[in-house]
Amino acid sequence: MPHRRTPAARTSVVRASAVTALVAAAALALGACDSASDADAKAKSGSSTGPSVIAPGKPGEKAATLSAEEAAKQRTDDDSPNSADFDYVEKMIPHHAQALEMTRLVPKRAKSTRVKRLADRITAAQKPEIGAMERWLKSQGKKARKRGHGAHHDHAGMPGMATPAQLEQLRAARGEAFDELFLKLMITHHSGAVTMATDALSEGNNLLVEEMANDVVAQQTAEINRMRGMS
Image 1: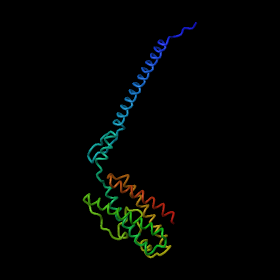
Image 2: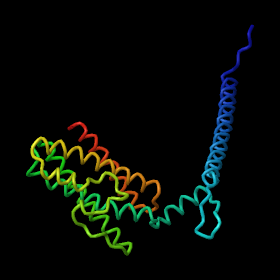
Image 3: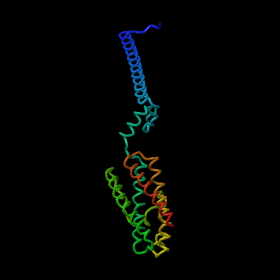
Image 4: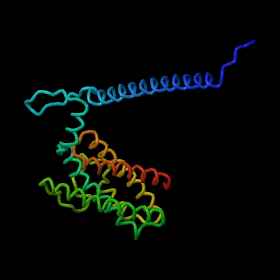
């Protein structure tokens, strides 16, 4: 006859199995904790031992090798404007000023309602930007160049600027002829501003100038696409 365990024996076996399962589960949990701790340690170690960065020294000084963390901190701490920052702001002010000169011609000359709305948007965006750039220059101990008509500014280094002859032609135009010439000149003008802003982003160092340049790229690229759809 097969041997049958008594109830007490069966209870002992069940308890023993349960204890074995608990011990195994505890071992697995401890192993997982150790693995997680190792992963955390590696992650922390990796964050502080990232690739090194060669930071160019100042004139007469040697270049320094910095950790990725040190380089990021230095970039945040030292955003002193360089010549590219000043060049961008000093030239973008008269560049924007000419755009406003062109938009002032729209109300009495344009036929298209879409062109009129576009001119309003350009004015609403660029007028405050001029003020922001002038305040930035003042905070750096510099004064903005005197603003007058865009035609009288030195256009060197300011791509997209309309020539005096083109501005005279725009002033003389009316209706659809005005709309067509306005869009043509403003697309070129905006494209020049995007070029200037892109150069500032690649060569400048100041965070505020970087933000202003990013705004110009985003906004004027969108407006270029809109104007091309209107042409």
